[in-house]
Length: 120
Image (tube, rainbow, N blue to C red):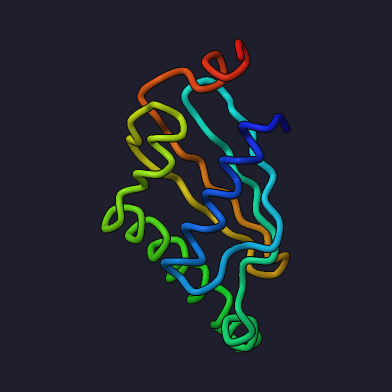
């Protein structure tokens, strides 16, 4: 992970903390063409961990969390990320494994981020 990928991860962590109250404890970021892939550990709050212990809790929490994160980015456009990359944010794909507390977010931008930041 280069310094640009690490800085993008810090922006994601701060964004989630600001809008969700808690960010992941660890983020690994990879630039791949127009995608920015963030692997995240330590996403769940203590209350979410409690909910996940219920019979239907894991599936309910996974569905709620993935939709909530996507909606958060729709309502709060990630301007800081666009300014940092100099590219327009287009879309976001999100998933989380509740048992492992491991999530992945794939941000899609309008430019080849990998190429842009490998030349620096």
